[in-house]
Length: 197
Ligand code: ZN
Image (cartoon, rainbow, N blue to C red):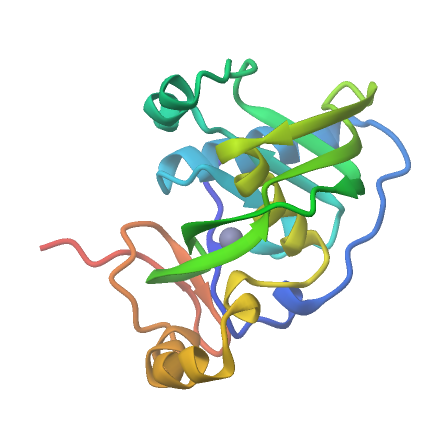
């Protein structure tokens, strides 16, 4: 089931998430819904707060970025990937720049500096434990989604000057004024369907 994507301004995007205790049919349904919602919105990652939930879970599907993997000569693990109860155990000192966007902050794309690689401990959707080092595009997407389960958004990484320049646009997004081509959930308005013309 495709779920509305919560926009900037909804408190749930700023709240700490809870670890999952164990697997259940409900959790598996939630994961399926998150993947379906991510694909419908043409996103490459989606975290539970973005659909109004405070569980520590995010999904990633970087398959549209196959070119970047080929250019960097990195093999792509099977997609989509599911990260439950994720914790970062190490980050590289080397940093990289990359232009990011977010389904919860439509139409805004800004360069963000982050560690080039990181090591993460997490459970997959079968609740099997993994500890793995990610780099390149995957490290980038995973850090963006990990931020979401910590209540952090990519705009928090921008300079105060840059945020000031975006302020008006961000206020419009909080108010539900967006050209997003997927169902969104605005703070004071609830679900908003894309306008078709
Ligand atoms: Zn995001």
